[in-house]
Image (cartoon, rainbow, N blue to C red):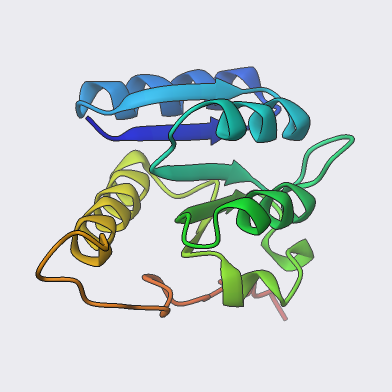
Length: 147
């Protein structure tokens, strides 16, 4: 069974992610802030992370930096309600970026793709295919104001 770590300071979002992923058969660990998420990742084998970007105390960029220092190949999905505030460098290290307004199908699709890639790139797999490309393009929908 694959384990997904969800880190988000919004308890409703965290609960929705947890329920959605558990219904798909994933084991899910949750953390309501960055330090708790880093501690869980250190204490458990985690196959992928769904990470909120904007959190009080320790933002998602710092959390991701700490996680990737210890597990450079850890797949991370960044979710944000503030896509314009996400630093440019994250596009090179996050496996996927999703807007928090994206529906559950988009999140499930991203997680399923992460797990598929993890299976393929597993060092013990004879079908190992290295990939450093993000699974989703960093597209931000620009708002258009009425003239």
